[in-house]
Every structure is written in structure tokens, then in C-alpha cells.
Amino acid sequence: MKRYLRAAVAAATAVAFAFTPALADNTATNDTTGANSTNTAVATSNVNCTVKQGNVLLVRNDIVVVSSTGGNEANKNTGNGTVDAGDASSDVGVSNSGNSNDATVNCPDDANNIAGNSTTGTHSTNTAVATSTKKAKVKQGNFAGVGNGVVSAARTGKNKANNNTGNGKVTAGGATGSVDVTNGPLNENTASVNTP
Image (cartoon, rainbow, N blue to C red; front, side):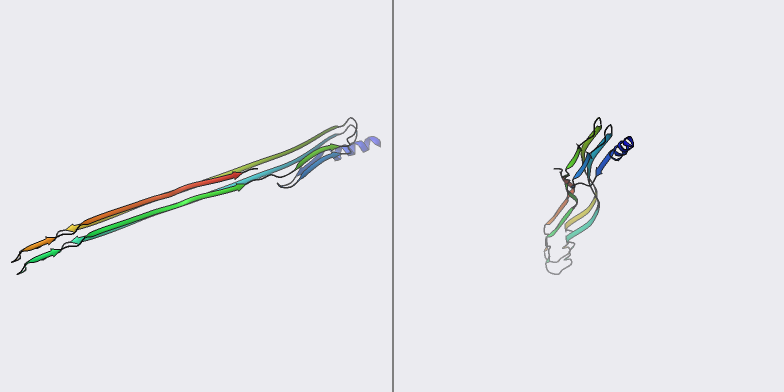
């Protein structure tokens, strides 16, 4: 009867396994074990922190700007023929931005893992193990496809003052063109991982 009791105690305390999520205390103890028994106590905590971010940005800009002064006619006048053309100007501004990932990961593991042996039996084998593992992973990915098709034309001229009985006078204005294309910021990734 005595041997049977010792075997029962050994079986009951052979594996004392504690697994709880992070931020919790884990305690595994071999307590009051039988003689000649083999006992194992394991306290384990596992923390996995994973953040995934992804985005896709497709931008297409088709812009056509035409500014024209000219093509004016003052022909076949009995008196003087005068053409006074004003200025032609065109301004194009394009700004494309997007695809920004910002990840802040706090991955603490405040678990208090305790594994111990207490009041073990004579000639018994007792093992106590306390482990804590932590994995923090951040994945960021983005894609930006930008196409800019810009046509800007500023024209002056082709004014006519022909076949006038008096004087023919043409005064053409200036033609200016300005194009400003900015692509960005694009595809910016910022990750901060805190694993205290």
C-alpha cells in the first residue's frame, strides 16, 4: 500500500506546467513530493507582437495648359493697322504624395515566472524551469506608381498688319511658361519597436 501511494504522488507531480499570456504571473512548483519520485515544474510565458502594414498608391496626372497671344490681324485698313498683343503665360504645379506607414509597437513582458521545488521526498529527482520568450516583428510594405504627363505651351506671334494704306504696326507681347512637378514624399516607413 505504501509503494502504491508513492507511485500515485509521483504521477501527480510529474509535470506541473503553467502557461498563461503575457503580463500574468506564472508559478509552477513541485511541493511535497514522494520519495524516489521524478518531478518537473515548468513556468513559461510567450509573447508575440506582430504588426503588418501595407498600401498601394497609383497616381496619374494628365495636364494640358495652352496660353496663347497672337494670331491677331489688322489688315487692309484705309488708315493705319495696329496690332498690340498682350502677354501669354502658363503656370502648372503638380504635387503628389502618399504611402506613409508609421508603426509603434510596445511589446512588454512583465510576467513573473516562478518555478520551484518545495518539501521534496527523499531520493527524488526534481526539476524546476522558468522560461520567457518574446518575439517582436514589424513588416511594412508599400508601392507607389506615379505617372505625370504635362504639356505646357505659351505662344505669342503670328500677328498680321498687312495691306494697310497707312502704316502697319505689330507689337507682340511676351510668352512665358513654368512647370513644377513634385513627386513626394512617397513610400516613407517609420517603425519604433519597444521591447522592455
